[in-house]
Amino acid sequence: MSCKTAVILAAGAGTRMKSDKPKVLHEVCGKPMLSHIVSKAEKAGVDDIITVIGHGAQQVRETVFGDNLRFVIQQEQLGTGHAVMQAADMLPNDGSVFVLCGDTPLITAETLKEFSACHEKEKNAVTVLTAVFDDPFGYGRIIRGENGELLRIVEQKDASEAEKAVKEVNAGMYCFEASFLKEKSGLLNADNAQHEYYITDLIGMAVESGKRAGAFTVKDAGEIMGVNNRVQLAEAVKIMRRRNADRHMLNGVTIIDPDSVYIEEDVEIGNDTEVWPGVVLKGRSVIGKGCVIGKGTIIENSSVGNGTDILESVILDSSIGENTHVGPFAYMRPNSHVGSGCKVGDFVELKNAEFGDGSKAAHLAYIGDADVGEEVNIGCGVIFANYDGVNKNRSTVGNRAFIGSNSNLVAPVSVAEDAYIAAGTTVTTDVEKGALCVGRSKETVLPGWVESKGLLKKKK
Ligand code: UD1
Ligand code: MG
View 1 (cartoon, rainbow, N blue to C red):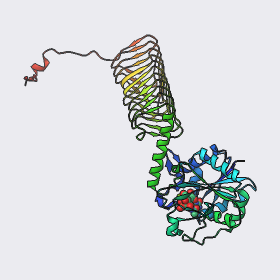
View 2: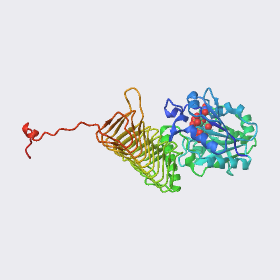
View 3: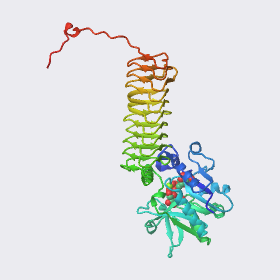
View 4: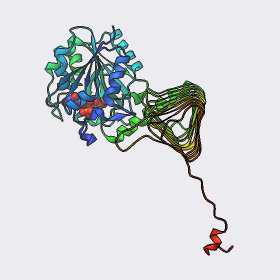
């Protein structure tokens, strides 16, 4: 049986981050490090997660929560061994448990599954996840005997020169036989360079008491990288960004410059979509097939239908249908819903607005708090004046209406189907179906006025 329980150590101050925020809440690609570990453990089949918190406990609880999550407080941060002791009473009496760290956000569910399967197969009291690093500095080293058998783990600060030369490191993730962990964690002591209780000492204790201790080495060492400072945080973000980009490319998405895009984990993209450099795709965004997402576009928590292209635009908490053109330089603010076959052109801003199929606003318009029907034409410079200084009001424009350039629709107002608004009109009363609304005074032309005032300029 694979591990159904996990203990996540997340109480440390994260001193090296030099932050007011607890380390495990620092974000990697839009999600706190701790949330990454929680979701990976869940995907690996864990349904009971005990998180040990201490430093910034309240903040951690408020930020990361879920049905499978329980918390236990470690009052004083006396080391990883002391942290796991706090959870001992909450552990099951039999079966296996994962112990994971809150600062290793790059671990994958696949690796956790293989790791736990290896632990079960070898019937170990403890199995440690290891990796081989060219530069192992800072990590605990895996010390093996003459026949390659695992002996113990030694921390950087306690290691001899010979031990420091070892390149196999402790990832800080373990599978324990629950009964062994409950029994032995209480026996740890702090006799070491850092005067801390080390969870890593449990490996040596297992070997000494004749129990089986094993190691499982990850294929991709990048997965176990621990984030202790902001340089490592940036490295983790870089690895995760690249990993997310690679996943989409292998699914048939063209990414012109994978190192320049920022795509968060939960984003979905259909095949044959092209993503240009500098694009940012965040949150739960779903992008269809055969789209073009142009340079520098930002899309957050939004959906985009098949065949739509978006150039240098910002789309937040909104949706766009199929075969629609957006941008360059369009701004869709939250709760805007643009249909299929539409055009939302340059310098068009939408906010909290419906924009029906086939409707067009080709340039320079503000469409806020509006319900715009289908096949409507919004001319250049049209403004939905939605705010009266106190309240926001909604306006409605019926199907096939034509709103001439430089018109203002002073909300709340309604323009019915097939109506025409002449260019330059300020609409303050409702316009009925098929009517023309013109609201401008007749201009006056005075022939010869410029010369009569002595203002005529000579040709240079
Ligand atoms: C630890 C390991 C080291 C390993 C490395 C992998 C020990 C003694 N060392 O070192 O062998 O190579 O992780 O990244 O375990 N924590 C608590 N309470 C505490 C102390 C720490 O909850 O009192 C938590 C931290 O919040 C963190 C995790 O445990 O999430 C690891 O602690 P950290 O201080 O980062 O240990 P490392 O020095 O990285
Ligand atoms: Mg660490």
